[in-house]
Each structure stands twice: as structure tokens, then as C-alpha cells.
Image 1 (cartoon, rainbow, N blue to C red):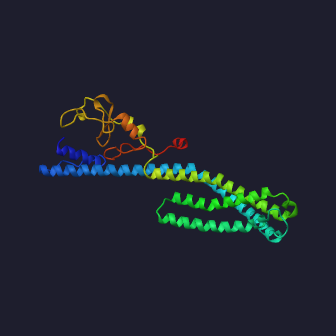
Image 2 (image 1 turned 90 degrees about the horizontal axis):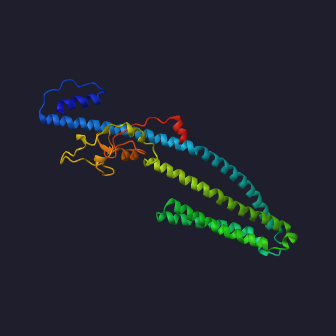
Image 3 (image 1 turned 90 degrees about the vertical axis):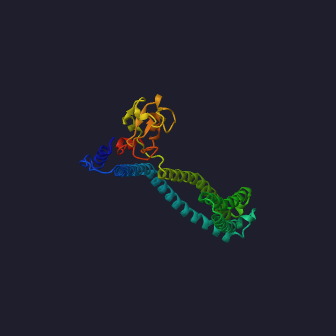
Length: 319
């Protein structure tokens, strides 16, 4: 192709089909510079088109993700807030009943004398656990440990002493034989508080673990979308790209005249179905189709291969 023909073709491409008119006379070096400038323009335009399409597809993927997770998030938040409100109200009532029972009836006889000190001991353990958890959190943050490790360690530091205390209170309750008759207020109110503590701890585990896993899955999905994974590609449009015969001069290496290889699988084009991208790169159709399942850009130059178009309502429901 001559320099003038190339200039008119590139100008028509950039100008929406309008030719630049008859070429002016110029030196060979100037023609070469013009060709490089036009090639750079075409490449820059393809890069811009590629980035805009990728941005649109990423926005579509985020919207799909939010449509899938938003009902679950709303439901979990409603259930969680309602459960926390009810449990907090019940805890206040149970706690103060047990606390006043220990103060008012602690002097009455009970075959488990340590039962009258359970509430005080439980409060002290709670305060100590909070301080230990805060110190462990500061220590791990100074050491530069991950947020997940800090959360797990501080949670265990605050929960384990409480579980030990609850097991001790449960042992006192089960070991008592006459306290329920000699000191019923202390026995039953303390027993209710211990059982409520155990039930709340089990509910925390049964509800907390699924919530943590759900949040972890949601954050991983967001991270993968930000890195370009999980975005819709243009694999369905690869079949519409121009197919190049294996004996075409386009597939011959200009240096030695041999048949070129696919840049992805490194297999010779002589036995493959070859397609040509708009950026004039050649790949075997299966490799490019697999690549474009989650991509819309050329594997070599990152130019736009094909625009899959806006997501239809039926496709959105299927996803």
C-alpha cells in the first residue's frame, strides 16, 4: 500500500468515512512520519474505545452483584438488628435480676456458696477480657498483621474467658441440690442468667460465622471485579471476526516465509481456524474465544476486539 493510500484510508477511518482529499507532495521521510502519527492515532482511539467498553462492562458487573446481594444484605441487617434489640433488652432484665438477687439474697444459705459471687466474678472477667482484647489488637496492628488475623485474635481473646466463666457457672448450677429450696431467688435468677449467656454465645457463633463468610464472599467478589475478573467478555462475537485461510500470505512470517503461530497456544496456523482482530493480530479461534470469555481486548495490544453490547434483561436475570 502506498503512503497516500494509507493516509486516505486512515483519514477516512478517523474522520467517519470522510476522505482527507488528494495527498500533497512530500518527502519520503515526511510520509513515514505521517504514517507513524496516523498509526499512533488509530492505536490511541482503539485504546480509548477499549477502556470505555471495559468500564461499562465493569459497571454492569457491579450492578449485577448489588442486585444479587442487596436483598440478602437487607434481610440479614433486619434480622440482625431485630435480634440484637430483643437480646439486649432481655439481657438487661436478666442481668439486673441476677445482680440484685446476689446482693439481696447472698446471705441466705446455699449448698454452692460460690454461686453468690458468680455475678461479680462474671463482671470482672468481662472487664479483663476487654482490656486483653484491646492490648492484643494494638500489639498485632503494630506488628503489621492482617485485619482478619487481628479480628480473629481479639474475638477469641474476648470470648474464651467468658466461655470459661459460663462453664464454671453451669457447673455450679448443676452441682447444686438444695440451693433451689433454701435460696430460690439466688438460684433461679443466677441460673437464668447463666443459661442466657450460653444461649447468646451459641447464637453469636451460629449467626456470626455465616455473616462473616457472607461478608468475605462479598468482598472477594468486589475485589475480583476491580481486578477485571468476573466481567462479561465478547466470546460470542469471535465467530463473526474475519477468518483467514491457512495458506493466506497474511499468515506468513515476513522474515522466513514460514506459517506463523498462534500467540496464545504457540501452535502453527497451518492446522487451525484463524481469525483476525480489528487491530490486525491473528489467533486461532478456540484460543481467542476462551480468552474473550472474560475479556474484550486483544491479548497482545489490549485494543478492543468486539463490543458485546448492553446487557439485556433476560441475560441479567440468568446471571
